[in-house]
Image 1 (cartoon, helix red, strand yellow):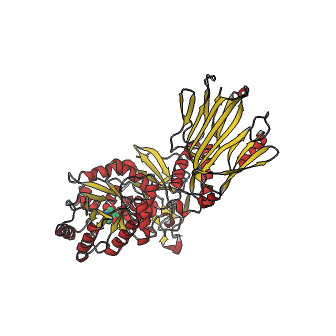
Image 2 (cartoon, rainbow, N blue to C red):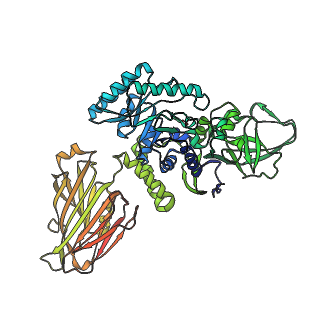
Image 3 (cartoon, rainbow, N blue to C red):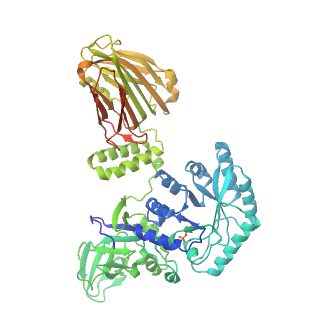
Length: 633
Ligand SMILES: *Cc1c(COP(=O)(O)O)cnc(C)c1O
């Protein structure tokens, strides 16, 4: 039994038992021939179980590759960080080809015209695409018919732009019709032999086929429904023990008593034959509890099976609890999955001649999921089950999301750690250009003796990559904290310096020795304000670089009071990868370096060698604004 999750405030939720999933896979693996591996099928968000989490568990069990239904599903896995081979099992649109290549997915090729479109796109891009050829051995859905297969194989085999990595077929009724299935497999074998087909992966079996001793000719099997713990035929129970992975739960929200003869629900389809007590459960067909379970379904409450009475509504059902007086407001309800044979998915769908595959998908689309491993809650997936693909969102919306994610992180460490990782990775994987952030930020400060004994001569070099927003930017040198603050608010300012109060604001005390964007030396123009010196850096060539990622390099020359005994360097923008270094003269001993970093890692690496201290984060680490370092001397 799984632990109950702590907070029971939700109307309904799904628990995913990853141990059950892995135990199902282990059981299925015992049916594999010694040279066989498996593809984990995770289409439709892993049959409603969550493609990312299922993928992780399947890879731990040794999955060779993953099977998805379309580009979007494959893309999402890639964005989430999946590196394993991903096959798109269904036919793809020609318009999806660029995305398929970009996300390194393996499309199924069913016919010549798609193969040709793929070749012409690959030729333009000068890339090679691995493909999966599908043969229609008798199911008569997708795949190439025998009469077309030879031509398709020979075209793909000979195209320099394609690599036939996989050849497969699919059974129509592997769970229930061994004769037809054997005929299909025979046809598949024949077509492979006749065309001397060679490919790294040959496969025909789905999960039901595997345990029915079909598909042993291939070197992979594609495991779906059985791995999720759902039998597709009663005879399978003797061969293998499968545990339901998904359990759909809710709580009793209302209890009522009605007299004999009263009816329940829309259209009065259920009539009390005795004085009846019933419970209202806040789950309906909008949550995936199928309408066809009206007057048929059963739910498990406090260990008792309670029949659904009346029609399933959009977001409520009523169940008869007359015989279970101990049920109260808030008692947990198991709608589907583990706990009793009658609420296993396959048994519920048998009540209305439905499909287990469909019921899993429709429940999985909406419910929040809690994942359990070794009986412990390990992770939860968000309420909104709509797949998040960042390119579906306008930039302004993305910015909003990222801002609130950062705010969240600051308030609640644990929760937002999750959000932070996911969101940043998702956004930046797609290289959204509108989110302003700096990459590979390097700031080097060098102190040397100057002619004035009270001052160090300070040379600073700042460089970073960032999307160019406009054809100019400002460097500001202010002589008061207040004036400096103003410059932190303006995003056309790329560098700010606080001038020592003893100096006049003039170019001899603060000088831009060189300012470059992508090696273009910029022109500088000074604009004197009462409390600051603004230096406008521009070049006509910058116009053409707007919107592109460019490398900034800003070199300054200035004086720094020895009496200050400290120097601070600030990170003013969201930054990806930081290196700050301070070189000091021999005469300065005992430099202390105190980083104050907010972001993924609060403790950057500090290295000290002769007269130089360097503070570094890993290149892939995010550092938040308001971070920085103080060097004290
Ligand atoms: C969905 C699918 C599978 C998985 O089948 P199960 O019956 O769930 O094991 C295998 N192959 C293809 C091509 C599929 O589309």
